[in-house]
Length: 160
Image: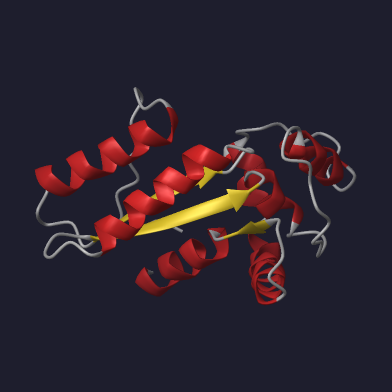
């Protein structure tokens, strides 16, 4: 799906979650015409960094004017979102190595999965509603792992 009113920006020099917050603040200040900024990140066991990011996000939400800033976090990582296309699970992942565990589970369904393969992501479009339902079910269960990617996908669908 192509959305001409949506601009995906991935700053190349961003390092860590502090860099992400700085880039979002710069985008907010440099383009007053923006309606929303969505910050997408993996948890990856970075407890303290994520806590600081969420505190920044809360402060950003209280600002007057400018675009609304949304946080989309996948715990332990994006591969958990991909796994939800194939199965519902709230299996706890280790804080260290959790992403590797999620990737191994994903490879039980797609043995040739490679991180960053755009064609793979596009091939999941028929399973997207299943993933959204599974993510919402995990959220209702108060489960960790969890992911907000479905909320972003639904927003993009609304814009389309």
